[in-house]
Amino acid sequence: MDNDAAAKRSVASIAYDVISSRIASGEYSANERLIEAQLVKELRVSRGAVREAMNRLASDGLIEIELNKGASIRAITRGDLSDFLQVRAVFESFAAHRAAERVNEPGVREAVLALLDQCSMLEAHPSPEGMVEHDTSFHSTVMDLSGSFVMSTEWRKLRRSRYRKRFLKLLSTNEILMSISQHREILFAILDGDSDLAGSFATKHVRLTNSRIQRMSNDQFEAIYNSTGPQFIPSERPTSATALNSKDQSRPSLVNVA
Image (tube, rainbow, N blue to C red; front, side):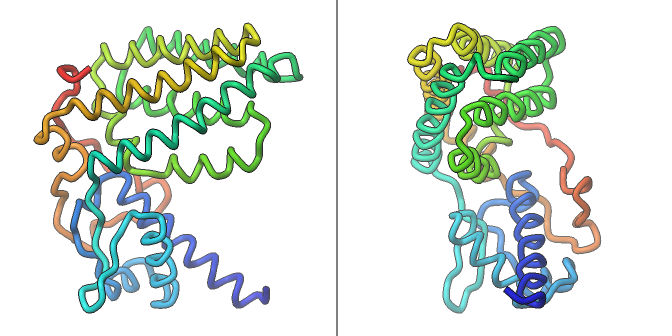
């Protein structure tokens, strides 16, 4: 690959990262149109880079591109969530199983104990923001402890999804504590070297999340995953990595669906 091609791909990747982060945060709402010319101007990249980013987003199922209509944010359905979480369950079970098998390898036990400390700290001071941070650390670490580079890389693509972040930010205190308890079950099974139990607990954890989501009312589901966001105002769209985290908005509690 020559330098020009590498630079073009790098710019397209940046455009992809910005747009996908906005989708994940809810800054772009379901069915909102993405105007190519506006993105070119705002992101200060070429039309070709934006188109490449759009194609990747469409391939990932985050947007839809229709002939003569352009691109729009794809709405999420209950079926989407169920399929997504079934795939996640396979990945999570594999990682926990492998981590338990490797528990006596250098650094594995120490990493698990560090996660248990995180569980205790979040339990003492539960918050949605703390839950997002802990959940990211927990699942990323367990996946890394599996020792599988391929699975870990593919799994991280799943974690870019907007499906997860919006849900975690709306957990009630009781739901956060319940999730921490499930994380502990997995971690203790890993420490015991019980690979089958660790994998089973990981599968159960994801399935309980799916069950909770599927029991939501239609209004709750739409408010969380397909809510209408603010109108497009180019000057207010952040482009820096730190600015991409949009401010949390109040949403319906999930406490009644747990």
